[in-house]
Amino acid sequence: MNNFQEKVAFIWSIAELLRGDYKQSEYADVILPLTVLRRLDCVLEKSKAQVLEKYERFKNKLENLTPLLTHVSGYNFYNISPFCRSNRKDRRAGGGALTWTFPKKPLKPP
Image (tube, rainbow, N blue to C red; front, top):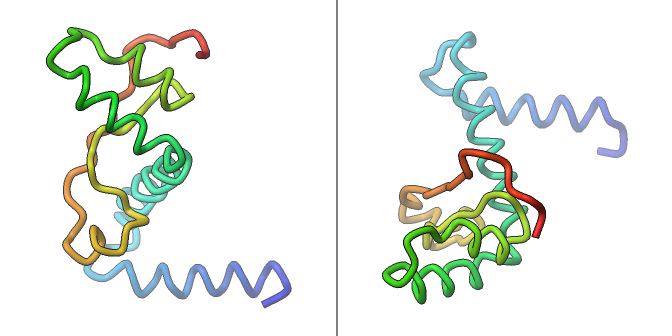
C-alpha cells in the first residue's frame, strides 16, 4: 500500500463495512463527528491523566475548572471522561460517554 490511491480505496472499503444500516446520505452525519472526536482524543492523550487528576482534586473546591483544566491540557478544550478510545478495555466494554468541554468564549493560550 505505497500509493495514495490504494490507501484511499482501503479506507473507503472499511468505511463501507462500518456504514451498516446508515443510508449513504446519513453516513457523513455519523462518521465525521466520530472522526473528529477520535482526533481530539488522540490530541489530548498525553495530558489525559493530569487533567483527570486535577479534575478529581479540584472539582469540589473550584466553581470554574475550565481555566485550570485547559491549562493542564495545553489546549482550549479538555476531556474529563475517564474513558479513552485508545484503551482496548474501554472499547470492548462499549467505552462510555465522552465528556468534552469547550469554553463558551476563546481563552488565551496557556
